[in-house]
Length: 286
Image (cartoon, rainbow, N blue to C red; front, side, top):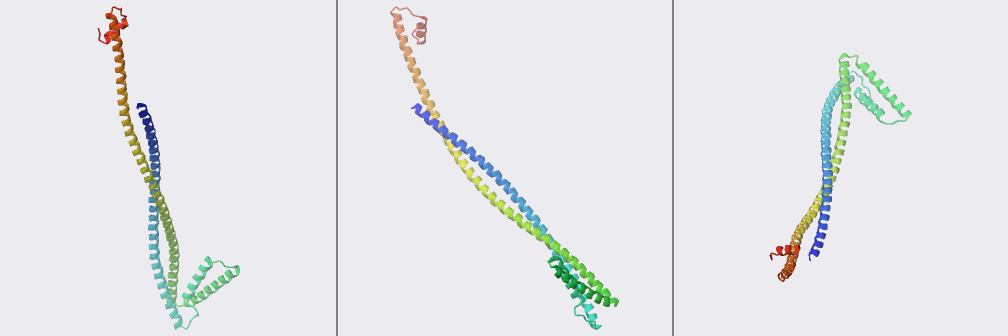
């Protein structure tokens, strides 16, 4: 029975070590998943912070765009008023052209922009340049004629200055609008990265929880095995003590029996050896 218990204890010990090893492996995996999750969460926060920075820059530039647009529109409106006054003067003095200076100015600006942004053949571009040249010449002729009147010259100069400032503001508006759009695109990209990083962090957290729960289960089995080992140790220890006590009892009986035999021989007159005397003393027969 004792040997059978020892063999069973050996199997429980092996099982306990297996659960312990598996628990440690799962805890290591859980730590790895937790570290990766934390790294991803840190990355997510950084992406969101960058997205927020770009959002603020976008809004700031958009606000500036709106402010400059209002200034540009005010300048254009003021220029238009002055150009209208010039046109009224032309009509009153019988100098009516097919197109006003204001219209010519707008058309020239439009064609200049078209030339800079579109692709033309050599002949098309030459034709466009010639057209712009003619319109500028026509505008200069009208301006030269009108500038003979000091008041009209002043108004025309003011209108042109305001239109030029409006044009400069429009270029600034375009530049800032592009910057705002760039920040918007970066904001969207950083939010996309944050969403992706958050999804990966959630997946790592799921793996962490699964590994941790599995490790806890293995630890529970390990503890159960340890309890069974302690129970086996108690039973085996008890059986060993009992076996030892029985063995000692049998040895003592054998010694007593031998001592009684020697003592009987002594009473019958036989001589005793030193060992015989020591045996009789140990058995308390003498």
